[in-house]
Length: 274
Ligand SMILES: [Ca+2]
Ligand SMILES: [Ca+2]
Ligand SMILES: [Ca+2]
Image (cartoon, rainbow, N blue to C red; front, side, top):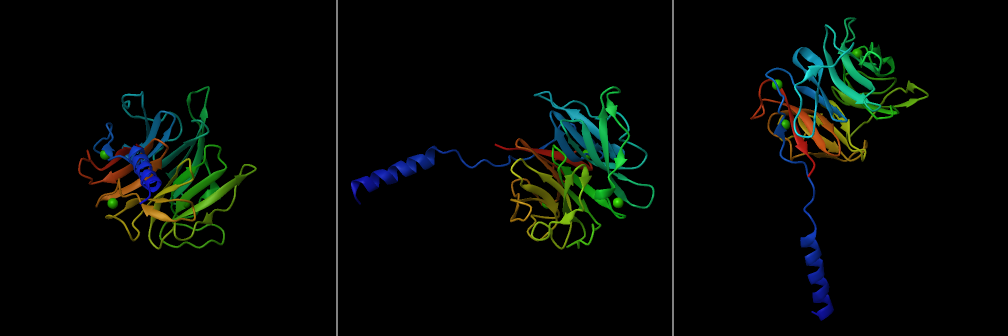
């Protein structure tokens, strides 16, 4: 081997050794404020974690840099006598989307509420009919500026067809109106359930599904774009149910049931990007 080739190889190996290992999601930790009942469906806006707590109301807890505060129900008109699920807080904490069990036979529909600066509470929610069907809506992810949404539903929109039991659909908001959602199709959707959806700053979709390729029961999967390809987020999944991911540049938070270390019922688990 010529001397310069040996030197180049040496430099290459040295560079390789000097580079940090690929960043990945850390081993998930059981959230410090989990209770024996429901702790589900996380969403983080700023330093506030919104989630579904006991009796299927929406709660919040704040991170002060060291610890999470004791959860309290969100103030205002969000929580009512039926179930409220899947908080999605955008517009710098001033708008909340969520799903509510309706009493008119439409199962869950999506609602939108605005923060009332004067009363310092959430205002009366308004149903988002463009994103709701006569059957069960479940999860909603909306971009910070409210121009893009992904939703999961048992229903169909317009002339669209579903691939499986629950699918993910995409809608854009134009001139203040949500357009008819379009089914993402395969491979992001599958012939079985896609229950939940969250999107990171790179446009990668974190979803939950019991499709082929799970470690066991429901797992968290990541789609590189909304057209795929899709990979199992193996760092966080186990043989039990992992669902309802929320993803940011810092955190991947999800719900699990019967996972070793659970406090009770569904718990939240937190993984950090490192
Ligand atoms: Ca509905
Ligand atoms: Ca699993
Ligand atoms: Ca729990």
